[in-house]
Image 1 (cartoon, one colour):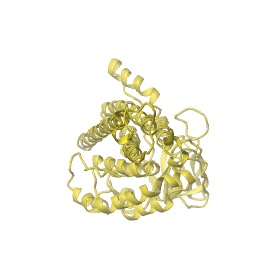
Image 2: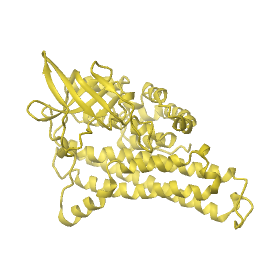
Image 3: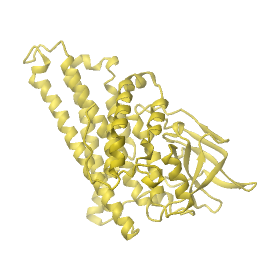
Image 4: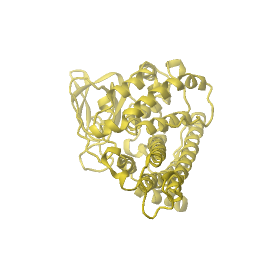
Length: 411
């Protein structure tokens, strides 16, 4: 796995990240060594995820005073890309966790913020439970929080609950008795919580993106979990850039596998210009095209990560306005289109570097396309050109998580 120098703005706390980089990269290397086999056997990476949290990876964005690394967004997204290069399932597993950290970072100071940041700084992992399988409108949340004998409890069913099987706590989108949307925290092992490994996607098979059921599950202490008004607009870009970082990792992995594939080839084609693949200009050109895609995707990731970092700084200084995050979301959408095109192209091109031997099941090279295609179907890219055009031509502000979840009662 190729080590990539962290880029972007250097934070005041970058030394905390620097100190942990060797350890993180050692773990990444171990994760990479078993990734293809885990995917073939559908072995969920419990041990690998636990090792990352034990090493403090989950606390990357937690401020130093709460036991974290205080990483910048460019630093976070680069490390997620490196992790995705090792195993693309794991950054997606951690997506809900890092989203929770972003919300916490932007809460006003108080006991809720301090409690959870300290928990995460000490190694706690969060999962995600927002989407529902009801088939009703996009903005409907049927999962409820109600009072039961003086205790707040959650009841309902969620799907696409990525990472919950690996988590200590789950951030749950609910509605209260007044039909107001809220976020609450439930311990993953609490009574009434049933986490089901029923994700059957063609790719990202180890993310545990299936069902979680809640039956009068108690809300955790300090589990009235809010967010700073206006900040949900940021989340629409953040969660997509996590996917872009994961796709960047897949792209790098395709490049490395293509290089190894060409170096290991012992047969060539009747029409090849050379008896050796390593001197076959057609095959070398395939590797070159993939390398071009890697450069393009990495450059896009670095730019959009820095743009969100800059807008976050403006949010902290100026407070919320509805338009503050609109432009970065439009640019994130453009990045999504370009990155998906490039990575799917790479995942297709690699088969031209290997001929018929590349399609052997033991090589498992199809996992790159399956995983990239699955990520491309999250936050569907098909709508993004229209979002961009409508913003540029008509000035229409894109919808965000604030439209879906409102400003919860406990904000």
